[in-house]
Image 1 (cartoon, rainbow over the protein chains, first blue to last red):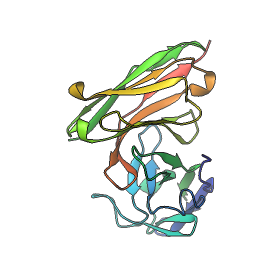
Image 2: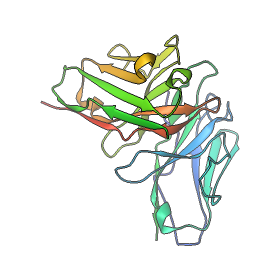
Image 3: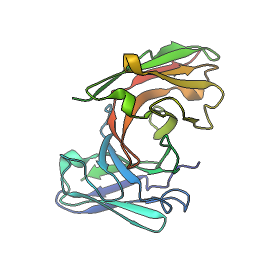
Length: 113
Length: 119
């Protein structure tokens, strides 16, 4: 299973909006509405930010939103803040059988200018 | 509060073995499948292995199949990863992670344990 494709880096100024893309295939991103997004600060464990394409876990800011079209999912961060500077990974569930199996994206470094 | 605490990492020579553990608390461990995910230094996340709640279903990434064995002890609320025939490319931080039921996402992660394979 190949990694999902993300841009290596995205940057924006405070207050701006940025979008990170995540491209897969019909066997993963395009085949299921089980796309999730994770934020990872240096030296820390990943944190779930979005699940099922566009749902936010409790406690995650509504500045984070997700969407999907075909084989490409997207994460948008609006009102960019300094604390949003981190690495972001998308992930897709790849099978209808249990237990879960996952493929992750290549990762995107978000820089707040 | 859900907690996942990994242990067992360290320095091992190529070809050697290591057993990682993940102690779970704050939720009904026996009701959840569990996963191991790793991250090589400076690299992205890589799913390693999954085990169902009753150990009936087990999956491995192709990169570790035949060398790694995932297991769990529900009585001890613990997840394990036995790693044999280790290679330099297995050097990574290994995380255990719990899924949100039914949504294909990992909502709780441990702090990770570093495995270094080097002579």
